[in-house]
Image 1 (cartoon, rainbow, N blue to C red):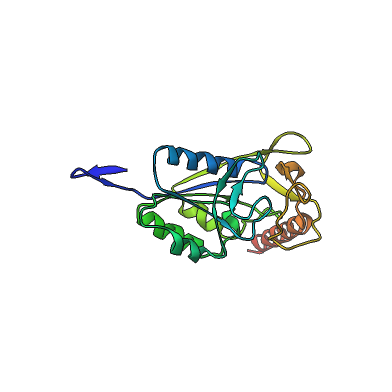
Image 2 (image 1 turned 135 degrees about the vertical axis):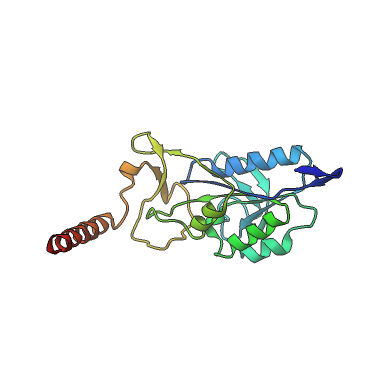
Length: 212
């Protein structure tokens, strides 16, 4: 916030907290929200209605921290429900929202709202999850936090699905379905095929250069 002519001018911003499951993303979002509340700023918290693992109307971290939130079914609902007096909007599990979420948060930031989002940056295959790539690109600040690899104890940046046969990107679950893994132990489905395609293309490019 800055001042011009004695009147406060609120500068909007977009913050993203991302990482794998069990890294403390939601805990960090709650920490930032509570600091804003201590500063007596009007805060609204939103969550996707699909995420009802712990509670229907609360954002809950793996360490059992919780805060009241409004569940919504689409990103446009967030825009419709934000009050004019709101200074901070927090969105948990933002990877579950549709692609319009980027338009919504940019509109809020232009209004002078501080937008704080937490979500998985990658799915269980190691590719950008839903709208996360776009959100990371437009963010003013990004904090990528690590979990702990369940196999070796190294910093974990990947989310491993225990049963990769279910190929749906969105499959809500906890330790029953997922583990945090480091890159060495991620073992993504289809990695062998990706490597084979890379070397085929590499050899093809090499053959073409020799014929020139």
